[in-house]
Structures are given as C-alpha cells and as structure tokens.
Length: 308
Ligand SMILES: NC(=O)c1ccc[n+]([C@@H]2O[C@H](COP(=O)([O-])OP(=O)(O)OC[C@H]3O[C@@H](n4cnc5c(N)ncnc54)[C@H](O)[C@@H]3O)[C@@H](O)[C@H]2O)c1
Ligand SMILES: O=C(O)C[C@H](O)C(=O)O
Image 1 (cartoon, rainbow, N blue to C red):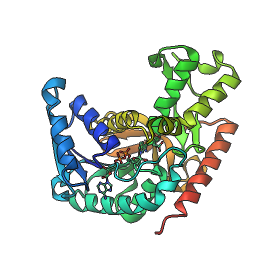
Image 2: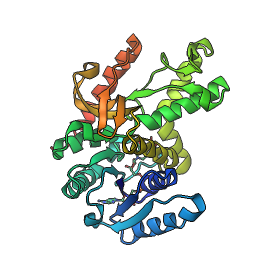
Image 3: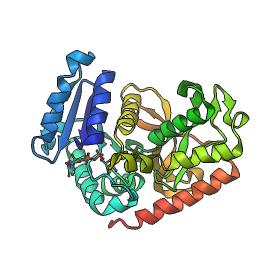
Image 4: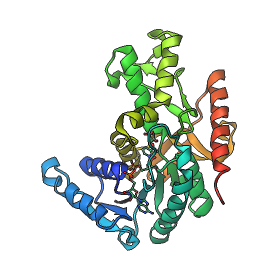
C-alpha cells in the first residue's frame, strides 16, 4: 500500500506520522513545493521508526511527482490555512489553483488512485477535483465530517462528564462554521440517547461549540489545527487501505441522496478498498433536514466562486 500526502505542513506531516505509527502502509511519500521541506519532514519522521516501532518507509519529495507514481491513496493538504477571524471560504482564491494543479499531477502519475481532499474550503475543493479530473466519484473523498464528529464526541463527553469512549455521534453537512449539522437526535452514550442525560439547551450548546471547533482552535493557535485533522485523515486512509467497511461522514458528490444534487457535502459513507462503497441514508429530524438544506445552499454559493 502506497500513500502520498501532498503538503508537508502541519496537517500533512501529522497525517503522515499517524499513518506510519499505525503501521499498515508500506510507503508514504510526502511532497511539498518548498525546497527540501518534505525531505526534512520525512527524515525526521523516519528517525521515529525505531522509537515508535513502525516499518512504513517515509520518502520526501520537492515537487517531483514521479516519486508519487502508482499511489493507492493520495491526500491533498497543500494550500494556506486560515488565520484568526477568517472563514474557510476566504481561502478559495489561493487554494483552488493549488488543488487543481496538484490533483492533475497526482492523477497523471497515479491514474487508479483514490484522492482524499483536506485543503479548505474542503467541500468546494472536493467538488473542484470532480470537475477537473476524470476520476469516478467513489474515488474522490473530502475529509471534514470525521474531524467534526471527533470534536462533537469531545464536546458531548465534556457535557455528559463521561469518557469519550462511551460516546457516539456524527456530524454531517458542510465543513464550515455555519454549515455543520451535528446529529444530536442520533448521538448516544453507551446506546442510550444523549437526550436522556442532557437538556435541550445543553445539547444546543454542544452543537454550537462543535460547529465553531475549528475557529476556536484557530483563535488559540494563530493558525488552524493539525493533530485531530491528521488523525482523522489517517482513519480514512486506514479504512480504505485495510478494507474496513467503516462508516465515516465524508464529503462526496450527491446525485439525489438526501434530496441534494450537484455538490459535494458531508454524509455518512461506507469506506473500503474501493473508496466510497455506499452512501448511508440516515433518517433526519425536521430540524436536521432544514439545517442540511441550508448547509447545502452555503456550499453551492461557495462552489459558485469557482472558475470552472
Ligand atoms: N478538511 C479539514 O478538516 C482540514 C483540517 C485542517 C486543515 N485543513 C486545511 O488544510 C490545509 C493545510 O493546512 P496546514 O495547517 O497543514 O497548512 P501549512 O501551511 O502548515 O501547510 C501547507 C503546505 O502546503 C504546501 N504547498 C503550498 N502549495 C503547494 C503546492 N502547489 N504543491 C505542494 N505543496 C504546496 C506549503 O508549502 C505548506 O508546506 C489548509 O487549507 C487548511 O485550511 C483542512
Ligand atoms: O478550521 C480550519 O480552518 C481548519 C479545519 O477545517 C478545521 O476544522 O480544523
């Protein structure tokens, strides 16, 4: 199993590190445009191998796509992150050009690859990869919901004063401050609906804190987060590489599912060796349906800014 990660910055390096530590891939190539940067990160990570007990070979590349040839999975993290006070959507002007050229180079060298898009605004960047490459839709996956769901579980555990391992929950919709749809009606603590433990008001606070999860960290860090994003990407990569058939909310091209078409947005999917193997239809409450429709409108508005 060969995995390429484009962008050796905060998220790309974190993602490569988690993939290596989980020890399921033979090779991880990290590629960056900055001279020597990916080679440096790869060498530093390789020097963790004996300490952390992994055999994954990590290779760095300064913009040489021949090193990425025949990758089974390619992750795109190249592009600028937001600064405090910015929205993800404001990154489109710079990141669209980067994602378009990077995805073209990746597909040229790995025509059978599965692409995972991380760069923001992620749903729109995932749509852009659909529009500009000829990869089939099950091989283009946007990562956002896996991270947002991890943040939702963190906030639920905090409210419930329970261990995170007792909590389950999922966030669908657009990966944006306003567009996320935390599915509070489906969230559980050890199979019991969380509404049995928390007031409606407290649950609304959990949902609100979840939606601004990325903005909260950006304010604290001065740039956006990387540990949980890297871990979330590695979870998707592992589910595909190991054919786990796990369900994650991922951004995917919809064609009537959830009453939506011609956009990429987060919905639950089964991930296996073929990429997105199935979109899972979850019954939504009336409020969740309304939030999903509003979220889709927001994503479509951002897609409208693309020069296709
Ligand atoms: N989808 C998500 O859940 C999620 C989570 C976190 C971050 N992000 C996004 O991921 C992106 C990266 O964030 P980061 O914190 O790692 O930023 P970063 O600045 O630390 O790293 C980005 C890297 O991309 C490289 N790069 C730029 N143009 C390139 C090109 N054409 N080819 C190859 N490499 C190129 C840069 O040199 C840099 O090293 C941002 O757009 C951020 O908003 C998304
Ligand atoms: O918040 C950001 O801009 C980065 C990322 O999308 C995140 O949710 O951490």
